[in-house]
Image (cartoon, rainbow, N blue to C red; front, side, top):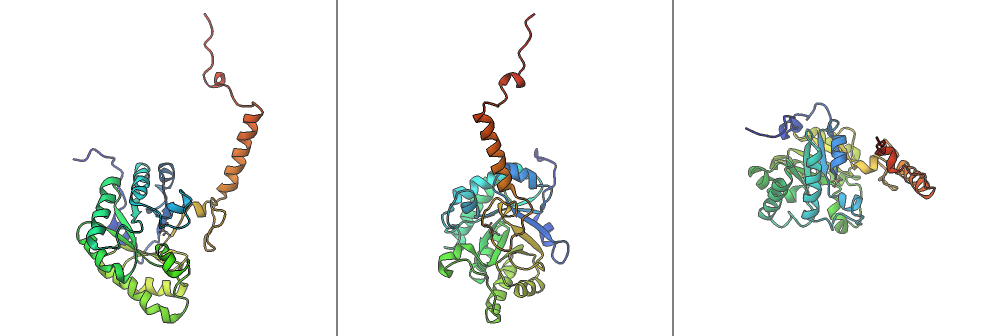
Length: 274
Ligand code: KIV
């Protein structure tokens, strides 16, 4: 019998069951405190390789390593009791072969305790998605704008803006669904195509800068909280934590410099002599 917490964690079949039903709420998360805050409000926390930019100040996601993903995955798992946690496979850890992908994805699952991994790519990754899911590793696919292809594509560009591009993108979505992915992230995609894909494949589509018709949405948490001074255009901000943090730090610095800082006697009052 398990000695672990009694809280029921969201499962892969739970997420699949959102197809055509209530939208799936997904946010990225990279550390334990925010995982605790998010836990009762989201269905899925994605430990995205966007943490390379957000947490480590990298220019792209390409410098993110398996060790970084595992370290942040462990931190999120310490804070998340209920939400399903998905950890991104970083660039170079899964593309070479299904066997390499399995070895690295198994490490992610074993060392972090997360439920699933996410990897980028459509038709070209279908054999790998099939190999992983057949061997017990649930996979969230990621098609459309895939940030790990930044150098091949020459930047981050919305896909599917001309109808000629649609058949290949639709084929990507169908291929990952047929391969066994339980959901698919749809990144930076023209709205009508994202809506068409959502209508045509049997697994939930999770949009980021795609379409409100998707079966769920994901945002980078720091973007929606106003911590990124230059967020992507499609991001709706629900708070302005950047300016709030700056104001708090300014007030703290002012107090320290004015020696207006509470002394320890306020916290631990001196005992009266008898
Ligand atoms: O790494 C990430 O945060 C992602 C999102 C863009 C979905 O993959």
